[in-house]
Length: 401
Image (cartoon, rainbow, N blue to C red; front, side, top):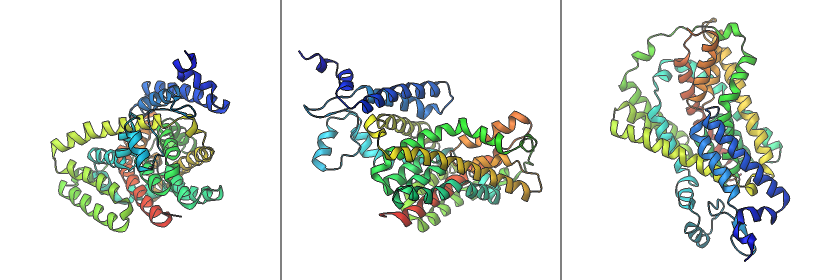
């Protein structure tokens, strides 16, 4: 008996290039770290726990698929030929979920449905000017990274998909990368979700660096505008916004439909649908998303030369967007005559509801009596809308380039 065929996960470490073997070991350890940080709530547990497990497992479970080929029986992300795909669907245990929900963007739309049900658009309707001003400023990374990525050798469509990481909206990045840069969507999506989970830990330091303590203490005036927004107004907003945005940017219409339909179900008080979407569909889709992202982190995929560029560009995009959001917060502060807290600007980066919570937590550290959450949620929801608009623009301009 060939002992190397008995314990293939170990023996394949010695039958590949040293770089691949080292990468597998590093990714196994990194998966453990992500799982630990998710379990400790340092990073987002809904994504990091299944992602860490998947990353560790897929890099452990490499086996001999034939006499000359090694791989895994989790997912084959680049399978496109009909005969090949039908064969893989019968072998790789996550391939049906990947093929029928992930590679076509369906999982992104399911997540958006759940987010829509959780979203109260009252804050956007109560503070429309302030919310949209901050949200547009927080797209700075999405706009500036596009030419930088092109200068670094990415095609216009690849650069556009990468730049959208700066919008800090994971489902949007997944959807856009599938449309604009299918061959790079695996590393782009992995980079996006890794960095989105890190915003919770990194943005507080950016806030403290850019905003002095005296301004972080500002207690904005909370009016009764939110309470005065009626259900009819929110229902009208959801359907009108969906129609207008779909007319303008039809390539992003599945995302608009999913998000605003979720909002409408919430406001129409359809409890059975709301419970199903929020408590079942959203969390199941998020779990599958995290798990699939984890098992896509195979060493051979991660060692793609393009991923170094994507890592740097993704980090810069989110950093610049955070800076742009805070500058938008300063702009709102000066327009209000010093009655607005500029920390709210970070919530324009549309990682719902993470950046809104970060804004409130940072303000609460220096002034427990200051409440900025209504403004932050308004900027957060507006950030989702502005990111979807830019996604539609990028797809319209750069598809096929």
